[in-house]
Length: 235
Length: 235
Image 1 (cartoon, rainbow over the protein chains, first blue to last red):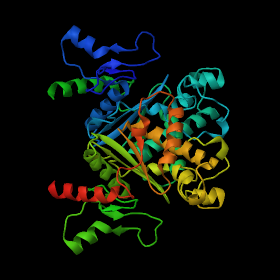
Image 2 (image 1 turned 30 degrees about the horizontal axis):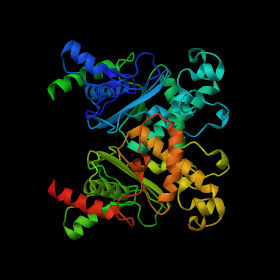
Image 3 (image 1 turned 120 degrees about the vertical axis):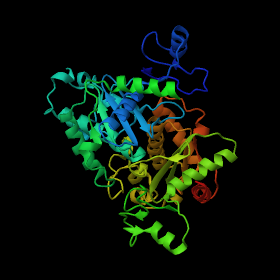
Image 4 (image 1 turned 135 degrees about the vertical axis):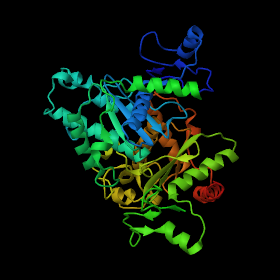
């Protein structure tokens, strides 16, 4: 079960298996794992949606003959989230990561935009989630061509997410999925990343380091979930 | 051997055991591990200085009856570096972290300061390392009282380092050592951290989460190094 968050994943917590506080109506304080196990009487593996995607890409990498020890998977859609796998395990002992809410250096042409995150205003999610197009331009991102300067601003922030992730965790690969991402957009991201990094840490070739998911049509999590269920059964 | 970086720690690299490119004179491309092993004919464990400190605090936590699964150790001195231990292992499969060079949101009263990092200008190190006092005020940080507004600006950036580390890795604890840090300064950092986090992720009590090192007089690395040597011998 790869659930939207925030969720309680610490097994020693009395709230293990719960969706905790969420703005989604009717879901706060819901015992998902308990209800599932009671109804179906089967073991349940419990993690975040983005961890499921990250694990799917981790499993797929072996099928594509890439040997990865670690990776980080970001999704940029209505919100921004990320999961990280290191040596087959998820990062986070106090809970799951919430990388969508890191703070970043503001783009000089974007200083007046306050961001749309209800908790933080201009965190990563508040600056690059899909609805920021509506907030900045009054129209959906789908109709904004990649030649529009707003995409340069987006690339500047997403490149910083990749940069900070690199400097903090040194993963083998950073993957960007979700509705806002495209290969053309990632080309801009790689250019900004190279400028920001300025040769300090070697991540070349960037085409292999900052990538779209291997799984097509947003299916990384589906693969990851089956793999995690299997792993859970066998452990 | 807990060395200043950048160093090569990947065992499958032909440069394993080297200090790689460094601005420190005479040290670039030096085979430290090879020379030590040739001269002394003993096994050598090789990591970064801050990883040594992080490991020392990880070991000490058990002596102080804290059960930690993970921690991050930042040093703020002439430069800024950090090491991370998760389940007894260091983070970083492509190499060691370089958390001192993440980008952050600039403080509104500090927008004109360009930062002092030769690679990035206003990365974390470029904004809060010891020599930034000389660059901003023309005098050493030692003579600047904590009531000076520059310390609020410093706290804003260091709190963001703690915030981004929390959201990316969810460690059990974040430790700040080095000449710039003090318990009084960390009180400011915790206040800024709480404002920036805005209740999104629970890290309370902050007095236990954002802390000075358990080891006094900058000795975390000494303890960590002996522990790593022992672990290396026994593995």
